[in-house]
Length: 164
Image 1 (spheres, helix red, strand yellow):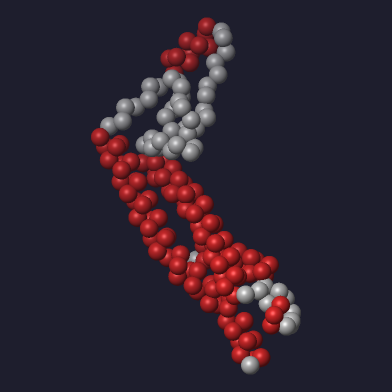
Image 2 (spheres, rainbow, N blue to C red):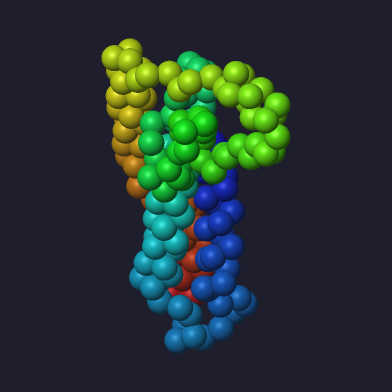
């Protein structure tokens, strides 16, 4: 529902920029095909960006719930150092050069857990779940686009009928 409301608002903002305001000659109107194509391109680009973000957030949330490590995400992770936790991008520990501080660090640092078969199974299940959700979102987008376009074109169609 929130996605539909947001898409509707974004749609009307872009639609308002493309369609001329007020009563003008028919030759001054922007062709509907151009408006529809521009708006569809806007919605599809917006969906592609947010679908990646939704999948990444879903994976992070599920990993946090199950207290497992995140699978490697090439766009968001950097190579890990020896004392750095796996899957947490850009975390590095700086240790002062004093010997007391360095011995305290070495005794409190926990080794990284090994990837077990159960962890690999959970990561595979999470990836499959993300794929299922992505396919459901992709399947619902054409219906959302169709409803927004038909509801926004209804006033234009009514005005064209009045001028006949």
